[in-house]
Image (cartoon, rainbow, N blue to C red; front, side, top):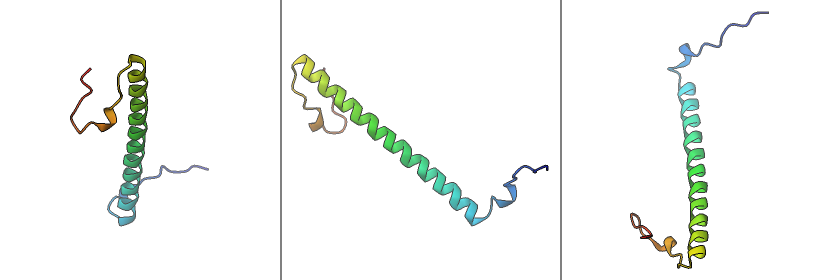
Length: 71
């Protein structure tokens, strides 16, 4: 039995197709934001370990946007 390719060209202008594409995009963006938040947590943990190893106070969590540790 031969099965033809699933051609979605005729469905591109249907609302269901657009909704599905939007849902996939939202899912990808949210997943990427979760991965970014996890990476930020890992960086914060590494900074705390670094501050403890160097004997400096770890006050990076009190920094405002755009400020640095000044190391």
